[in-house]
Length: 414
Image (cartoon, rainbow, N blue to C red; front, side, top):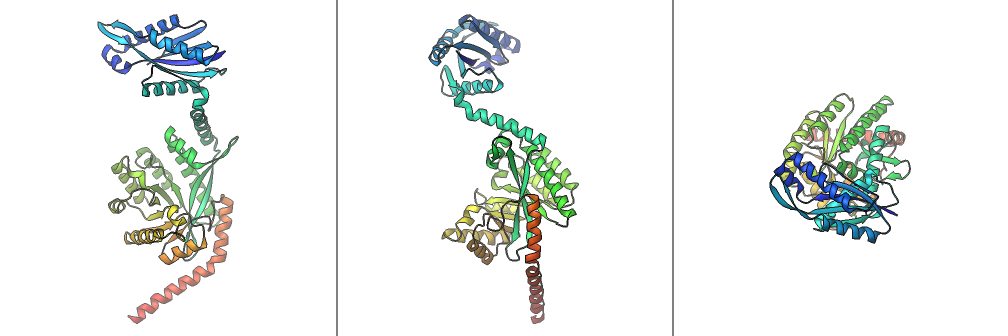
């Protein structure tokens, strides 16, 4: 036997409810449930909800379920009078063939999706297989697992250094979130970040990142490594006042330098609200950076308005730097533009010595990529920074002395 779960919705029910009132609308659903029970085979069940009737029944085959749903949608179409208002009741049905699975919250959500698809197709019913919605079910499970991971502190941060292109010193590190799932292994960030944005969990996730980045920064300071840390901020949060207040309070209590990286598209939904929050962040000493510059549609007017200190060139341009013809021109002009606007420039995705050499010639301030350093766990980051200080320190010191000497010589020539 196959278990079928379905949702029967009266067409245009929201408008009807506004016309006849809530209590009469409830009575309409109760009447619909009574009609359905009379039409369904035994054993079965039907019960009214707030806006539709839910039902379940069993059958031998999917074809039998299809026939019953088709007959049900036809038999439920009837002329009805309520409070003196006469209308023709028609319904749309979304159903799930659950096989031998018990009815669950996941199957209810699948039936709701089937109902929406039936409405979009203007079909009287849609019977979907549980496997048709397996990706949605997997996403639902993953969302719940992510919420649990935040509560259980089961996430981790890796840090990718950002290095000054000329001197080689480590200027800061970008905090990158990692999720080692207990059964699925490492979940790609682009998968669970988008899931957090869609499900409304992105604020809690970002607060987790901010809190742990501040704690890691304090730990680094205690062992003699003073390092600025940059955090990626979802465009969903940039204009959010609650997030702004939380972030300002957290960072005000921290001792180190924290930076926020935002994408070009972060201003799209609420430009004025986003700009107000960015100005508040900047006034609080939070370093702001435009991430993945070149992947969106930034204009010069857009750049001039934002209180940002850094521009990060998207890695797609950097990856073609040594092989393309137009990319070097675009990168060089972007560097010159940013410098004219008094911003520093970071090149993302530096993966070859040729790309690094070209960026140094072009005057790029900071570089980041696998050629220089992969994202590192905190202990490995400490080792990397200390090794850089040991290996690059004399070079940096000599470069500083040479810079002072050249300035002194220029002054003497005047």
